[in-house]
Image (cartoon, rainbow, N blue to C red; front, side):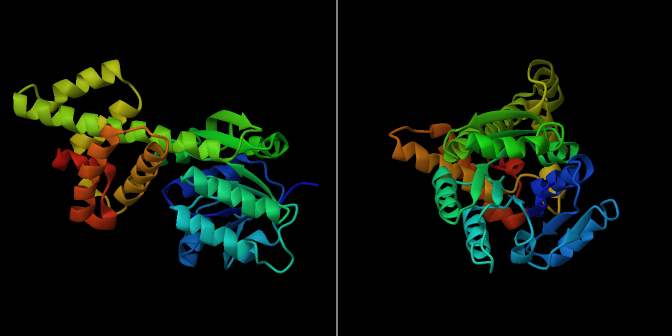
Length: 297
């Protein structure tokens, strides 16, 4: 029998992933969509093919009839609160499979696993790498961890649907997926910091930003070139909604620094980047984007 799927969370990443699940997931039943702001869910649904999705008035009513529930939320508190609410639905959650795509601390992921399993549910951690444009294009990289049998149920909705590739940690603790995600995101933080410093030096030394960008796109095609272009265009101060919000970037930095401290390591580059992100946050608030570090190096 074909499973009923639900999607909870329509942020920058969630919208693209949800869209591709509807368009490419070969779902037998309409996808049930839920979002904290109900109007955003209705506005988003209006952009999808007719009859392919429904909007639930709240997360409990999204989860109750569903067999597989995807979540993609902004921070640890949001996912913990969401799962706590769902565990209290009248008929319980035994037999349901939860797939969390949020970027959270591995301790949070492991706590979610413990809670859900204690209620008879299955749980797969599935954080993703990639920018919102990649989410929209179905070009993310999924990192999956949890019991092998549960991961197998999720894979049909990953490569070729929401992702271009998977990193499969089957039969490893769910927290391993978000551990990789947190460490991996420090590469993004450090990359943007390096680019901001490089562009500042290029401008002040007389090399010129265009000349530096030509080097970057020749030597480092992909994310480096994309972020270099964003820095040069001033994209970070033109947006109403940031592509990589400074609040979320600093959350990732905090998780990384907490993990480093807990394991007797240091991440000096992340400390420097977080200091500059703090300035962006102070200046721009919730509209601040990670690329705003260009004005703070």
